[in-house]
Image (cartoon, rainbow, N blue to C red; front, side, top):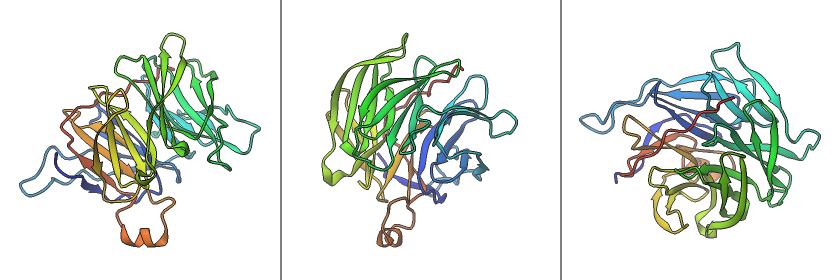
Length: 301
């Protein structure tokens, strides 16, 4: 595998939720600390010397701080924002707020999310004042816009992904340094049989964003860990890929063959010395790990 390459100087505070849209042939992502939404058409293959330059990125303002986005079959995007769920249309005219599952609890906020194989959207909530708190929960956004809690007692639920067969949900419990697995019922949109799949050593940072490739292996981005890691479905580390900045936040497979791994990063939480030593923190990177990803499902609401 070639080393991770620097692709775009976007300087995100916390780049997150990269999504590949196969019809547009573009990568989309958000900056959770700013009301900004990005899209980029990568180059078609490497140039004669090094990688061909990507197209000029498109940046638009959002009415919310989008924590994560998901493709939506009816157009626009489904999003989890700091204060709930929303449908967001970056073209304008179709955005609407759907509601806040943690309304009235000022210490709680919404966090990362993903569309499930059942066409619903799933997201976590956390205690923003006490990150080690087990007051985190998982929420399901149904196709009609209603939402329900499907699991509580989580420590900062963050990255969220599903196995290729749609029968297992994986959730990063970031501040507990673990990845948790559940049996997933795609008909009911519920989880059961909670178990710890991965425990991340302290020297590898905190697990953050999470995706699954076509072989069913998990890819985890490490906050303050200088890496992304691939685990097999039983939780055994298969490899780690060094990232040249402290914080990798999330990943997405894209490109015509779904064999390019795009990696978002962040500047949030870095010390002044780290910001000086790693000026590319917050930028977009890419690697070719020799495996393929999957097209992310669409929200059907």
